[in-house]
Image (tube, rainbow, N blue to C red; front, side):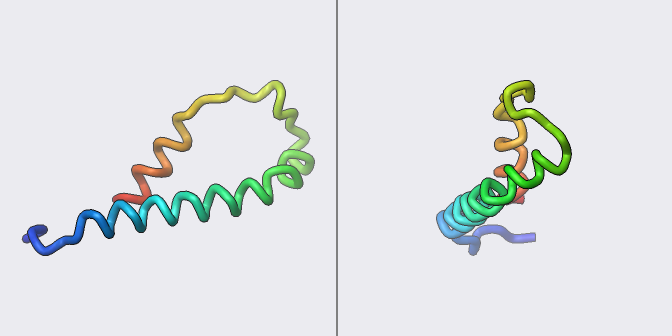
Length: 60
């Protein structure tokens, strides 16, 4: 497979835009979900790993 014709800047920009859209979407839904799941945000771990994994998945 030849990747020489791929516009890598467009791929990165599309991944960033998709990641930002997903972040905005799920931030809007996070509070109702946390309430329904009976989770306390103060007790949850604050790892950046889910954000990194989701961004890598957007690129792939």
